[in-house]
Length: 125
Image 1: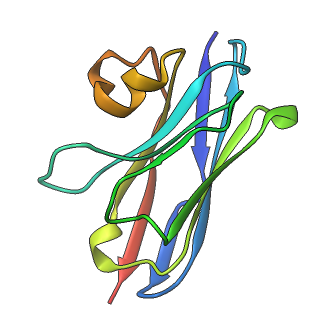
Image 2: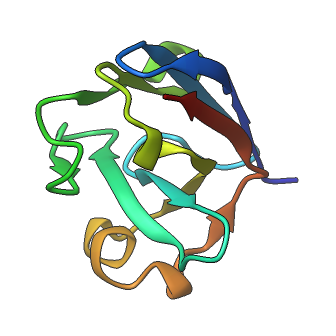
């Protein structure tokens, strides 16, 4: 059974930091692209960041570039999203998702194979 377990969300003040984790199981972690997405209340889901577990290619949505860092620990089948300089507009439910196609994760998330449950990030101003 494929599972993507997101964790690490919480309440943080403006300017604070959080680290999200996405633990994967049930599929061959190597050679997958794993991305973070978020959905704020009343807004559409948007891509935040993506990493390819083999070649290390990364993508960042412009509003988080320079503040967020995505990384992978292939030995633990886990992806991390270090979020620094958090702002109120970062408040959302964050989801991780996986697909063998890096391009699909970045450009066409509705076609991504596997999705995890979300973890709530709340940034108070």
